[in-house]
Structures are given as structure tokens and as C-alpha cells.
Amino acid sequence: MSPGADKQQDVTDPRIASTRKRILGAARQLLVEEGQEAVTPTRLAGLTGISRSTIYRRWPDPDDIVFEAIADDTEAPPFTPSGDVRQDLTRYLEALREGLQAFHTTLLATRIDRAERETRTAEMLRRTGQSRRYLMADLLGHPREDFAAAQALIVGPLMYQRFLAREDITDELIELVVDAYMQTRSGLLE
Image 1 (spheres, rainbow, N blue to C red):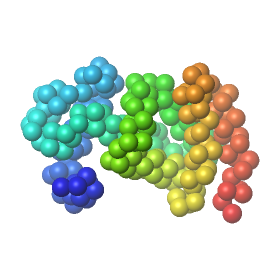
Image 2 (tube, rainbow, N blue to C red):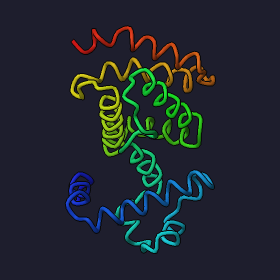
Image 3 (cartoon, one colour):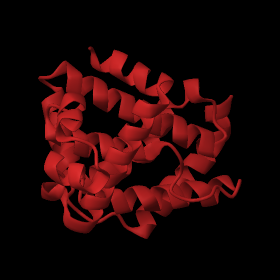
Image 4 (spheres, helix red, strand yellow):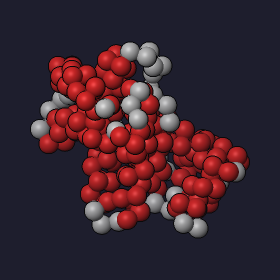
């Protein structure tokens, strides 16, 4: 079964969706508490009661569980939106900063590198980016289909600071990014 067909089945079969949710939740728990090395099919089976064979069937490469657990964590904002665009964008970028400075930075860099050679990984990254774009667009009241450039302008400086400059993402940088978005928001929404 192709990864796309598997995803489609997840949506339509509540049992499969529930199993997937339990496994990814356990993976996130292990990531936070013990780090990436702790996320193994054996540990996940022990935590969830789901067989290792089921886990291996869905994720033949255990690294994919970690990546999907991180990527799947985009279904809702990491906070309750206030409706104030400036405040919500600031809070979103603070959560992004926390994620970029936390455990999964190396995993993301590895996935970006693998995506250059593997179409499956490239597609996973594309879906993750789209999911985060939709989340951010909805949060800011921006049309989804018209948000790609705005997302790049908002997220790009944080990615540059973390991955290329190799420096911490400061409150000042977040404030500059939010100010720049707010100043160009009306032009982006036209």
C-alpha cells in the first residue's frame, strides 16, 4: 500500500486512526522525556500495547515515527488563539522557537538532507510544511491558498538564525518578524 493510500485509510477507519494517534502520542512522550533514541518500536509497543509488527508495518523506518510524531503535532496551535493577530503570531513564533531549539532540530536537518534524494521524505516534508502553513494562516485569519509567501517571510528569519547563523532566536528577532508581518499584512491580504 502506498503511503498516500495508507493516510487515506487512516482518515476513514477510526480504528486505524486511533492506533496511529496512540503510537504518535507515545512517541512524542518519549521524545520529550528521554530523547529521540528512546523512540523504538519495542518501547512504543510497551507503552501502547500495540504490536511491534503493526508499528513496523506502518513505519518500516523507525526514524519516520519520530518525524511523523513531530509533524503530526500541527493539528492545533500550541495555545488557545486570542483573536489578536499580533499576540497570536508572537505566541506561535515563541512555540516555534522552542521547537527549533529543542530535541528535534537535528531530525529536521537530517530530513531536509534526505528529501534531496528520497521522494517519500520530500513528500513528508511538503505535507508537514503545508500543514503548518494552513495552521498559521488559519491562526492569523489569512486565506490558506495565498499564504506561502507570508509563511516564508515569517518563518524564514527564525530558520536562518537557528540553522545558518547558529545563534539563539531572541525575543527581539520575534518582535521584528511580527512587526514586519503586521506592516505588510494589509498588502498581503489584498
